[in-house]
Length: 445
Image (cartoon, rainbow, N blue to C red):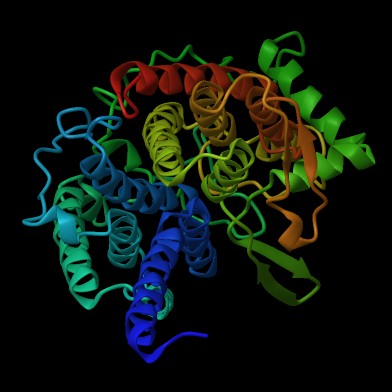
């Protein structure tokens, strides 16, 4: 039996223990890497809903991940190095006045969302999610002063990154001239069913993160356009695409569908037209990063660092690839096959609205696979369930390079790329990924 004299100290002890448990509970919530993966997926969904093309999506992800990384690097400078002085034009990041009243993991989430809100249209699209996160930490007992100071710190770093992002020439490229369509032999022209204008013809003018310039990676000339000589390499490459497209197996179609990653597919049935949406290739690989870091059981900071390195590699890969595309303006197989071989031939998946050489899928997939082979591990087996929500069965891979190779080859199966463009694109991507690993130090050994 507890005496009256002992009751009050005992009750106080219980309250102290409960308060301690509450504080630990909110910290467990904010420190859980699952929260970061969910946050990235939330941005992924918003990008999908708003039909962002892949190159634009890469910009959304890179700035949001960088702001989160800078905060976790500030929280643990012993193990993580700031990107200031490592990526182009990024200088000293704001520091909090009183670090003892900052929950850095929550700050990383809030800053990610603020940058995602500002970079993504419509602005404010992540506000509801942020409110849910704040409600969760409040319910778990976060002290009000820590929440206030954490939010203020997140805002200061986010505003700094946004200011830096506005100098990457994106705004200027919004008013640049459109791609000029003409009938020059072998030059890219819009393809059915949308016949859309050349997408982001000036993306090579965007400021890269690690590359010295958009043309830093040396790319060989593509085979010369020649459909008059049946012995020419170009003719052989074209015949190959047509043949493969006419002899697809069930497995081939599954692979093509799995990596299609078309953010806006126009379906035409008679006089009826409607669109279906899927993740862009960037969103697909961000999902793979999430799958891999979860299987690897990485903590919050490790998870953020892998997302960040991956998004930087993808961002620079698109700049390099788009420079190649709009340097050579290579025609799509569909256009050539329709003109010279079969006017009714159609690729299994829709040709995207930009030139063919090199394959964007091959470039960005090889680039991020190079990062993941280094940050996660070689011969890392995983099951990619990214497309399950679109009704497409998962695929199993024994390594990231196996996945990236398949992603590149899927474009040949889909009928929208020549094999050479995917092979050269893979080498291009691996070189960019290796350059990112060479130039950037994120996690200190």
